[in-house]
Length: 127
Image 1 (cartoon, rainbow, N blue to C red):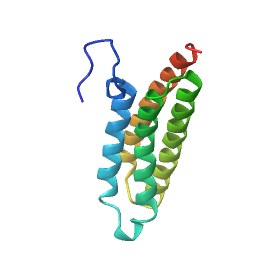
Image 2: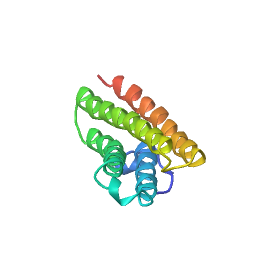
Image 3: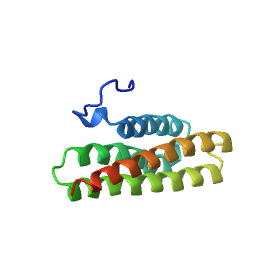
């Protein structure tokens, strides 16, 4: 996804926060490809679901009409992002990922957290 040159937001795909969350979800899937097969229905599944939930809830919130309804989905995205960070720490703790990779992915999570906070703040002024 390339950065927007126009300030007009017509689709959830135009939101930079969605773009960053989407990239994060792809990274999570790539990381999980290297997990042991016995984790397929455990940590692998949980990580992938949380990663997808972040960008999916941003998209769904964008599609809602009222500010409160939008914020409900943005709040769920924020919770899923926090859940994702926790699961990444567990993955590092049991040796599935190294600390260097963990730090890179946590930085991406922090970026999405900040952008999501900004989106929620901007949305709250529309009530």
